[in-house]
Amino acid sequence: MSCRLDHEFAANTIITVEPGLYLPGIGGVRIEDDVLVGTDASRVLTRSPKSDLIVLP
Image (cartoon, rainbow, N blue to C red; front, side, top):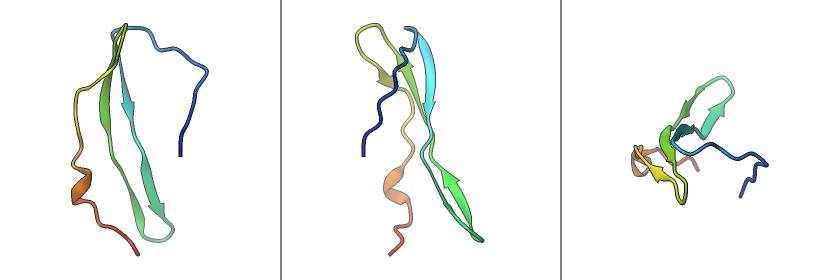
């Protein structure tokens, strides 16, 4: 799955990438990574441990 936005973020802006999973009647979880937008490239500042997530069948 991919996503494309027709928006440019200004250099030196910090944004969050927050995918989430919600199950009706159970609850949900969001995973947040902070990203610094650069002039030539972006840099992930935090990395949430995704390998520890529970995999649902």
